[in-house]
Length: 587
Image (cartoon, rainbow, N blue to C red; front, side):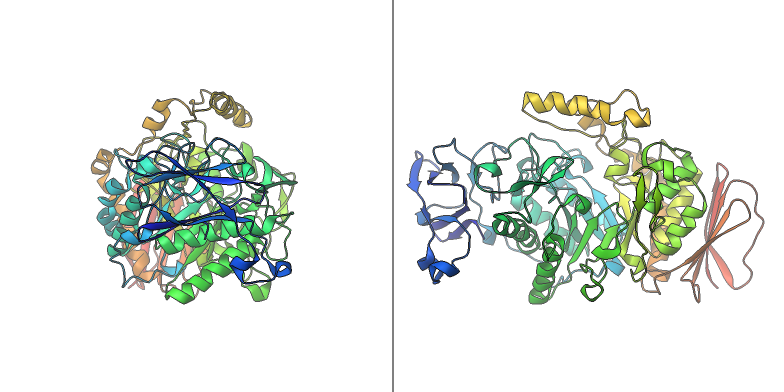
């Protein structure tokens, strides 16, 4: 891998920079003046290959350099200003500053008996390190791990932690793809968090962004053909996965995935918005990442789950290779959220315009996808394909996530959008369905604080652009008074208020009880269900479909006197605001 390798009192530096004619290493040892070291381009002798077989690495190297962990360095490429290493493990001065040498072997792991979890066992809990606690650090988050374990969560999905501009950001504008954000606790803090999670029986999945990079602090164009005009994305030129020079770019991103899985003992990755990754190669970059992750899993005796976010309803991502799929463990399946949200709230703007019919809820529960090739008005095109052959646990569903909350103008949670009774009812559908459920941080205790979109750019041009762009983004939804992402108050409003968990004991107990029933009756049963409407307002969901062991009866208003008979025992019930739900198990 490029970057640094620490060998005792010496460090090897490697940089892939095919566009460079000269590269100098600027080394700042602790307590010493900076030293300039000329780097050399590797040649055929370094690989033991003839020139015509030489890999197109265009790698520059400085080996045997007297340095140690904690020293800082940067690169000067063809007389440029000092640039951080694109494979930095830590950027203590931010995305424009020097790289700090980190020795990953210094950390002592205690998770040798941990081997990961199968996707069938996943109950995901999505959190943002910066707002999950008042301190906004990995170490502070560790204090809440017993709470998550006792809740019934089995896997934590961490929003991106790679280096981004400023001190607070969602993480999707990151530029240091290998660096762990310093004010979160840096690499050592993240290792402590993952190690502690494993000690509590919790898997950790990291959200990574391979469809684009942020603008501020992005110096990759100075080094090589990382982007291509062959494809366009919502962020401009696409990452170069299939154009001239793409071999080194693909290696950079595949190695990044393996880096997180190997060095941080992560149990999986969530690939952000894969539908915006442009790649016409014979082997798609997502499939290559999956293949390499599988090889690592076999080599290490671990279970690794790669999950993709996509709005395409495309089964290709999770179907096995023999069915022309990529073989991922799961995909974010949005239709359940959209169907439930639109039906209960009545919202019909943007992508909600295609939802609102009650039958869409049962279709999402029974099949995963609602749209399977039908015309989608929001796209003015057809959307989706048949989910035949996709195991139900491969559908990751939710009632809230960072997008569905934070991409609203005011960042309202369902506490502000649905009656309390509806929140009890929909939680039962989410957590007892055969799909893989995802809980957004604070949802389990009815967190009232919003989760808004926040940034901390230092570039004045970007500061203005993000503030103005955010207002224009919501014109179609008619949302007014859009908070300024650059306003520090926007970030502060988005922190969890943990004192609310003590005020919402009933909702928290409801989630714990539902997850207890899930462990007993859903997790290891056949993963399907039969959901159907009876009358105008009552939904029945049997899990599994055949030889059902669990029955959810959900009433969306009106009256219902139906009882299931002596073969069923009532396990949970709630009735409020015209919404009633009862959960029965086999007597």
